Image 1: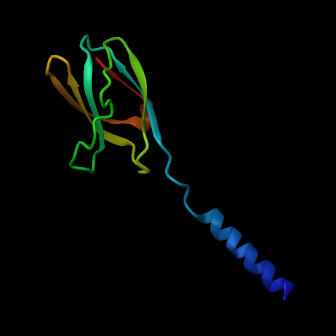
Image 2: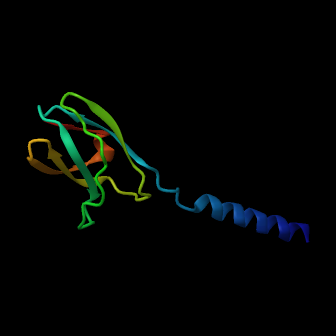
Image 3: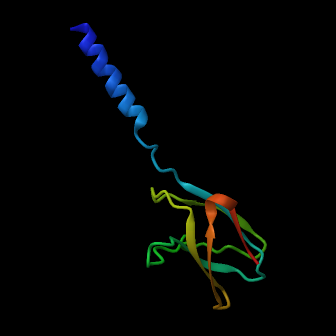
Length: 107
C-alpha cells in the first residue's frame, strides 16, 4: 500500500513540475527623447485589434524623461503595437519586440 501511495505522490509531483510556468508581467523602460511631451501611450499585442487602455492615464511623460512601464496582462507576448500621442497632437505608431530590447526610446 505504501508503494502505491509513494508512486501516486511521485506522479503528482512530476505533473506539477511539467506544467508550464505562469506568465510574467512585461516590464520595460520608456524614454521620451522626442522634444514633445507624451500625453497618451498604448501598447497592445500585435494579434489584438484594439489599443486597449492608455497606459499613462492622467500622467504625462515629459520630453527628456523616462519611466518604467509594466504590462500586467498575463499574456506570454513580446511583440506589441505601440501608439504614442503627443501634446501637439501628433501621433506615432510602431511595432517592436519589448522582450528583446527591454526598452523603447521615442525619438
